[in-house]
Image 1 (cartoon, rainbow, N blue to C red):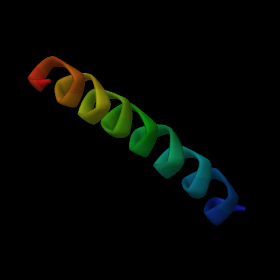
Image 2 (cartoon, rainbow, N blue to C red):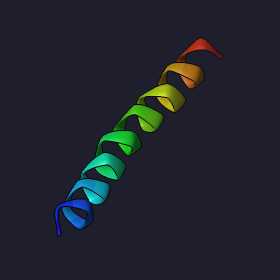
Image 3 (tube, rainbow, N blue to C red):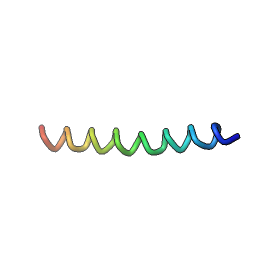
Image 4 (cartoon, rainbow, N blue to C red):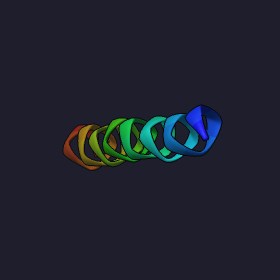
Length: 29
């Protein structure tokens, strides 16, 4: 049960980081 809750949380945290990375990359271009 804890793992089920923890995995989606990790994915939610990972997505914003990737989105920010893409935004910074576009800004760099």
